[in-house]
Length: 67
Length: 250
Image (tube, rainbow over all chains, first blue to last red; front, side, top):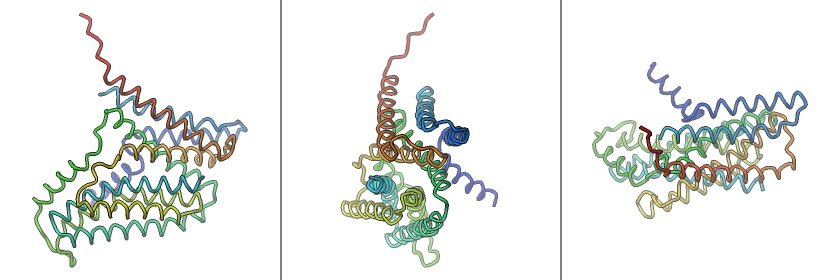
């Protein structure tokens, strides 16, 4: 039973988070910062694109560094 | 413009996953039992259709702002994962998907497994192998169909794109009776990753309350920037990879 639950949780973790949890965490953080800036009346359209490029670049660089 | 991108994204994503599922189904059918393998495919498609049928209408009642925030985040995470893998593969830092190799491994494993009849299925191993391949490869596409389609208000169009890809891959695969190892999978994954990342960024930001400069035209700018950055990343990683290691100082 516990093994089945672990497999189920592992499947959904792999499905939703994938190989690099930092990407999912970074996306959540960037969306939160965007919403906060919009709430404060700041133009925040640039936050998510910048975050996407930084997250993608950092993620592939981390792999390249270890090869 | 949005509808065209919707169909293209779903078609490409579904075609890539269908190629990978086809490899396993062919191995199960050739080495085990075609009836069991095809029953597994049918069962898997029923599960995926149920996911779309249940989640699709449910998402249409969610307020658009909240829907775009959640869907944008989900598509962005999916898209960045696809793009990340495609960049690493294109740069030679991750092995390319080898359908011929996967087929050979599946055939060898299927040849060793015992035969067992269960629930009117002549060969349970062949059934589960095909069923799991279809469900696991198709689940992400089902999520893309539902989320992308609901956001655009065209789930039907997304389903048509997905169905066309499955039919094309299935007909081609069964015509040549071999895994589709010459399909440019990584290029297709690269394109899907770029499109999902673009729409995820656009909708996610809109869901968080952003108004994009230029409105929908910002989608094209985002796509161009993301593709250019990804191509540059591949080139930079290739250069880094082939550069000789600096000589050690004594």
